[in-house]
Length: 265
Image 1 (spheres, rainbow, N blue to C red):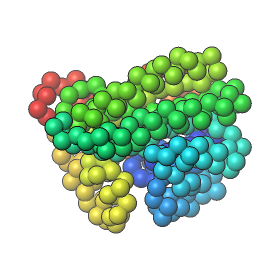
Image 2: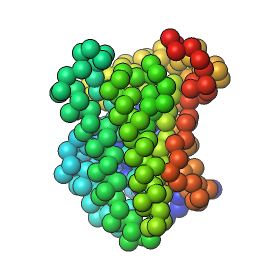
Image 3: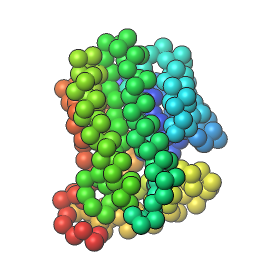
């Protein structure tokens, strides 16, 4: 069943982790996909793996001009934009007593401004389609204490709130805006994000991932770590006709993590 047949999607941070798994699933479900990211080697390799319905755009989401470029690249490559997954992100700071202005500036650009500007530049092509779907990658760190450092947590809470407010404003254009809040998902963010994982071999990343999955399995009621594919499936639901009446929502995919009461874990 091709639930995204005829759809065109742009996935930021699409070269690894959640972004790469979502790209694979969207292609399988009939979409044409542009993956954007800073690792040109991994991006082109993945696009080649996915075939003629995938393309790669070199893009740094901390730069407004690159966000606009990725949107334009998508419409120029495939003629339109139906789905935007503002997925790219990563660690941004340290403990509360060590946060610097540099951390704040970088964090705002990476985690919040990228979502706001991605949404802004997606509006025009989606209006031309008479609708669209925007998904913002948030986090359970924006919901619960000790799931991320204070700066990261505050910015993810802002992403979730922006999602709801922009969803209300864009509803009249039939543009749905939702967030996904992952928790206990085994991805490279746990060892420094794509900035670190892109410097490691596939074997080194796989070794770290396997160890992480074992650790995370003890942190959720379901007794297993979350996988990038779990988030990809949530993104598929929101992007497909099955999610056509869902907007302004934050879909928490965390294996029950936020329902646990041990704040030290």
